[in-house]
Length: 178
Image (cartoon, rainbow, N blue to C red):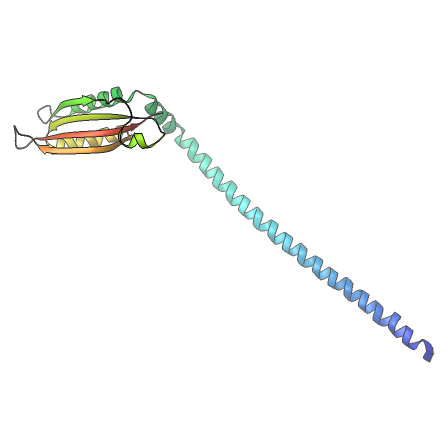
């Protein structure tokens, strides 16, 4: 039996233990890869769910704001000079006539001001009014509230030579259009 003892130890104990160790090592490697893959897929799923929830929230905001979008598109589709003139006429009708008077209104041809530097369509509007500071301030606040696509380009205020409580105001706007 002494002759086979070494072969029995090598092939009966050491080789099976080594083969079992290889299988156990492969099992641990496989388990770690599966765990890593699961964690990766789980994190991707969580980020996908967050993106889906955020997209649903944005979609609900878009649905709520769709009426505003349609109103804004209508506003941008209007001819700017007539829309500004009409709005200013409505605004000045509500204000005391002694405190505000239109002295000039013109629409220069061609792009100018901010509109010349961009590819976006725009129109330029120049207006001049004489009135009290408070009334002019209220009128232009109302105009800019009604027409948010107007961008003030230039504003000049000078004291009126006729009355001390009146000022002359000249404003140039760039109106963004479709």
